[in-house]
Image 1 (spheres, rainbow, N blue to C red):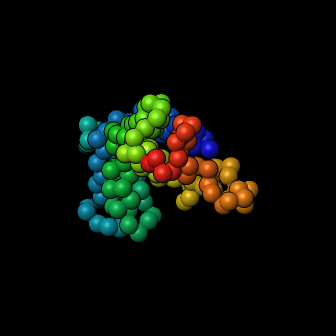
Image 2 (cartoon, rainbow, N blue to C red):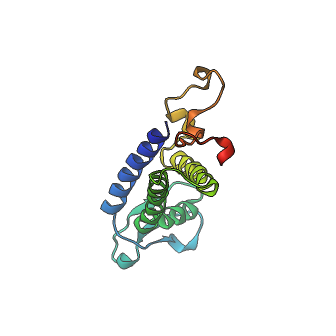
Image 3 (cartoon, rainbow, N blue to C red):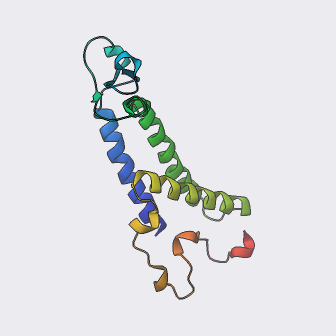
Amino acid sequence: MTADVRQQLTEALDEVEKVARAATPGPWMSATHNGRSKGIALVGAVADRGTGKAIAVLSGVEWRHEDATHIARWDPATVLRLVERDRKLVADYDRLKSQGRLSPAGYARLDCLMDEIYRAAECWLGTPNVDDALPYDPDDDAEGLDPRDQVERPAGTSEVDR
């Protein structure tokens, strides 16, 4: 099951990266018409300031400036940094897991990385709880243990070895 969430996260990151790379390069900035909270808000690339090229024009909403500021802060460069950060989690997990028998600290680090991968998957997969997106039913496990929480350990090791 662990491989499933890593695969789903990787696929989501691929899609997010593709969209970010196709978007207008940043950095982006936001501006409101006459500085009012009620009016037109624009989001555009800093390089396009004053050219009339806007990435987004927001109108008809009470708090357009906050919306425009939010959009501008999620420019492609920001998104790509977050994608890279989360790809590193998966790569670190895979690298550590491939080392075979680990020290207790290694197993603890593996567990921490898996927790971070689940948090990242919850964010990028757009589900409030990644468990809803994965094919696991706790009622199917007689002991009530989620196999995704269990780190695969080499033969001859146990929880006590951690």
